[in-house]
Amino acid sequence: MVEELLWSHQNEAIKMLLQYMDDFHNGITNQAALVQMPTGSGKSGIIAYLSRCLPDIGLTIVLTPRLSLRDQLSSDIAGRFFKHECSTSKLHDVCGQATKNFGYLAMINDNPP
Image (cartoon, rainbow, N blue to C red):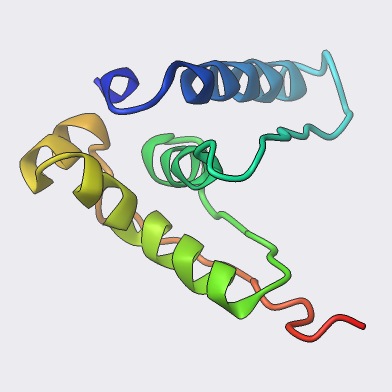
């Protein structure tokens, strides 16, 4: 299961986001959600998991302030994150939608003032 591949705080963030999605779809909230985590805490893994492994997510849009971050996240979402964490066969077990399509809009401004 994917929980074995992630840190406990990543699993907690995913659970919180899944609860938010349920609440949003059931009309319990119409507010936005935000997960704030420090550098190096695994945000890319959470984004990769949510965009690749949930059947209700049809399209993922990721906004980033840097080209290098766009490229990293694009690669992670495309499968690099899971290749680092498990074999390809395990990826199919964890995320049956390993070939799921995704899209991203990632360039805001690579040279901020």
